[in-house]
Length: 144
Image (tube, rainbow, N blue to C red):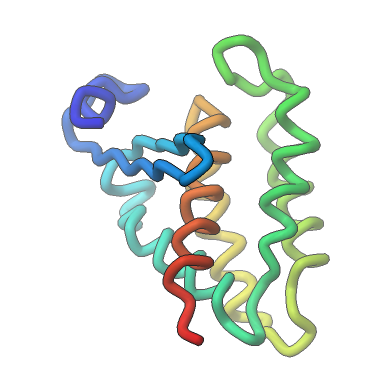
């Protein structure tokens, strides 16, 4: 992961990598710069995980649905073959469907805007892996 973090999409060393090795043997890994538009990516992850865990947050179904829809629209280097505006619109639609009816609008907008910051990657696979990692963390750290 250290090598991947140092060889991220912009070849800057100011990055971190995170990986999850599941019992099934599946590996999810993502590499990010520490900040996206002056927002720490770790804080974005924290908010996403909290929203997934919250009683009045969002369901993780949007993660599976957005991947299902957009994996088919990538090339062999995991670059989108469609405009990013399209995925932002679809992300908003799927998030809205996954939103609990009691979730505050301000929390929803904040989450949507922060996820849009993560979409500013050239590698959509990295975005999808980040969502999968957040989902894994929320399921395995949820208070019972």
